[in-house]
Amino acid sequence: MNQAALPRLSKHFRLLSADEYVNKRVPSFSPETRPLVVMLTWMSAKKKHINRYSDIYLSRGYDVLTVTIQGWELLLPSKGSQIVAQDLLNYLYHFSIRGKQPLLLHGFSVGAYFWGEVLLKVNADLSKYSELMQRVKGVIWDSTPDFKDTVIGLPIAMAPNNLPLRLLIRSYVALHLLLFYPLSTRHHIASSRALHKTPCRAPILILICKNDPIASVESYLNVKKSWESLGIETTIKIWDESKHVCHYILYPEEYIAEIEKFLAKIKFPCNVPEPNRIQSKL
Image (cartoon, rainbow, N blue to C red; front, side):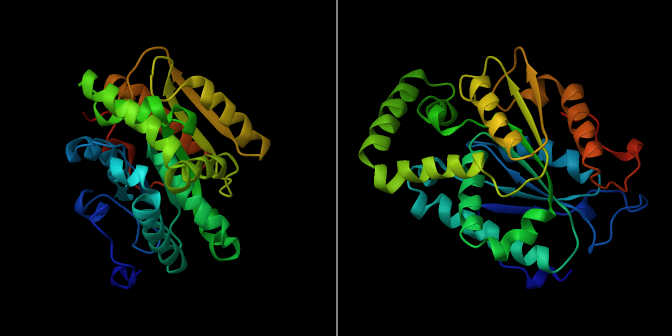
């Protein structure tokens, strides 16, 4: 595939190639068949933390496209997250029509809201994007809250270690969602609905914990019912005690095992022998 022909990526994106990661002596994919993992990261994620998750897939011979958005881009979707969503959709559309690569989506925290914005654009032109949705073979959600958890979750994500600031942000977010319904809130509600009624029918793996103050188990059990009503095979892994977007750090072997089982179940290709893969790199 001619990478130069793809739309130019903005500062929100980082494309990581398996060519720069996998040992050249290890059999890998040709550029025309190599899978692409789209990783929707969490707010305030540091590059070194994102790399830990990227390495899981790079070591299996997949390319990884990371997507990062900022807090203000969530609060003003038309000026922020929706623009980035269109950029991602444009890239994936041109990517899908130029090759045969399967796609895997791995999203964290606010990544679910962001993907909902992408799905709204897909729904607006299903005839154009239906083949792209079929190219997505699996979806993994890690610690992703639903809209009703936003008032609690967004402040914690933006100020995890600063309680006074977190309370201030929480008050602002609640007021913002009330006062700026036309500019912000209605978009978040629409995104949540699009996620519940997703046009992408690929199997889904949910990774959550019971004590996450941002992404509640109750919300996920509800959305799981929505997905299963659409015929989407949905698997859920619930840890009794963990931390928001920290399941891999606290339970590396279990985390990798869940991903391995999911990839095997959806028959996601891997040409890299197991001894050469990352098992639980931290």
